[in-house]
Image (cartoon, rainbow, N blue to C red; front, side):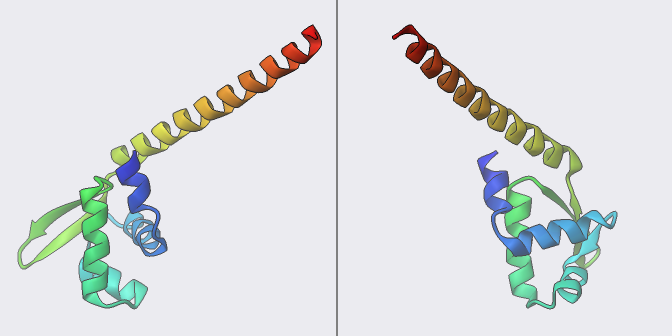
Length: 105
């Protein structure tokens, strides 16, 4: 989960993920055209997304094609939801136990 969240902590990578989501697969230059950034910058951001497991890359002739790993993205969503719920439940339990202590006194 931390790798995925870290990868999504940069706004350019979020935009890349959104862009890739609209296609079966894109090459780097398609993303460059969309974001108007240097190819080296886009390549570095794609690399981070691939290393985090959120994007797949497959070689195709003289380029590479990138696509969103929807299963990994869904897994990240579920892990974040579990973490959020755990924190909310812990907070509720702490708050209700403090309330019970105050009533006992």
